[in-house]
Image (cartoon, rainbow, N blue to C red; front, side, top):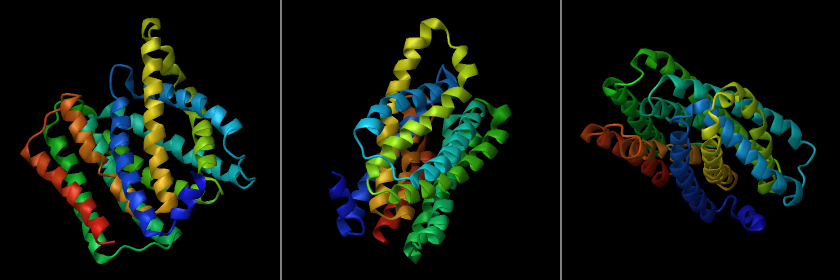
Length: 299
């Protein structure tokens, strides 16, 4: 599996595989975001998810994948700082704002900065058509956020700070996306990075969320643990897919295509969370999807 993935890097087949991995990440990232809303709140839920994927990753990290090279420990430390900061900011945003308002702002900010950083770090470049596609996608995402902001009826008194936190969270999304792409390329075996990333990344957030976890009623502990395990499985698919996509494909393209998660998030908000939709939101989601298609076709 490892040799096959590495052999795809820099090939046409690799770009196509990275496309499907990024879209898979988009779907499951929307699910992952939705899991943090609900009766347990974003802090307790995120703490339970991180604890679950840390425990599940441990035997793979210690006994299955090759041991990390010495230089990887400093890279893991940087990833831990970025991801913990991102998770704290995201939980603060979700605590203050409706999912369909906060999520598009986070995801709309991320790809624009990720493409710019990838241009500097990985010497990647976008064609004019790809920039136009990115502009269409970002406009659709922010348009969706603006529409939701106008029509949402919950948490209106805290929406302004929620939007500020969401924008800052999006900057951290861009930072960890490009940093993780660097990290997974810095080790010989990408699955070594994945296993140790999930093991180490799951250590801090349960401690940060401990006050919220302590407030969970005893009768709800098993339900929260179940949600944590489900979230861990979703995280493996979502974050694992995008990390592998950035290993074998273009980092900027993968970052942009993942943000079609906003379309999936809107569908989840409508069908599962009971949040309203309409023709204007459908049109904006169409802009997002069209922008992603243009980015891919113009590449």
